[in-house]
Image (cartoon, rainbow, N blue to C red; front, side, top):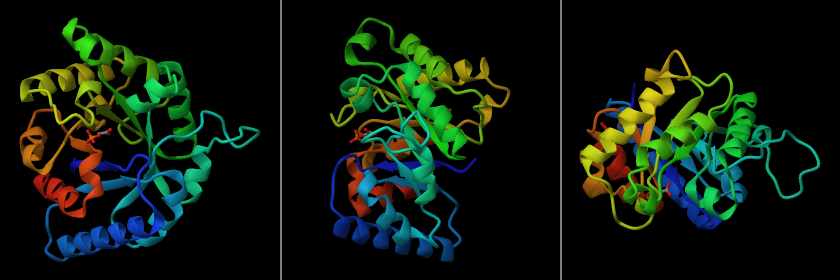
Length: 251
Ligand code: PGA
């Protein structure tokens, strides 16, 4: 499968800079296509208010758009929430779910993440389910069991290689500049793959991304780890040059 590179813009930016960034990304994607470069699947996940402008700017380009969260419920009386169907209507193909920043600050437990993932699947979107251990859990030797529990608890009915992506994001690596070693990443991804195969027939087709302080200078090494099918990029995705260097590292 082609590598998948997802940019998570978090709650950062304004419309004008988002449009400028997307124009630059679309230009580079067009150049890569003209040069017949190896395909890399790219998704950018802007904050909700920028989804429309980003999707409009990227229309006609191979770069896809994702939301950063969605409601577990379909449209209805849920003030402040955004449904998966709304995101799909605005051109989103993917949605991040269970990011540690939401698990930690919005109390999202596995059950909630699983319900949101089910909503994403109902809207024909790909659910990018984030899992990962805290620093303390790693110190206590629980990294693998935490990931396994989160995967098992967050997978919706009907999950498969066509509609689910898992992102392994150790909480202590997000935004810190710290990353696990290649062998720690390999171990976690292998464990997640094994966990997936207990729940579905086509586990080998589920992309498993690594996320947490991915930069141009560590992308090649991370992307060459077995079972790493792509990366989820936060900070570096806000810079066209850095994000594109990571995409190039995936070719
Ligand atoms: P980071 O964020 O690349 O800035 O560490 C990753 C993420 O939160 O998805």
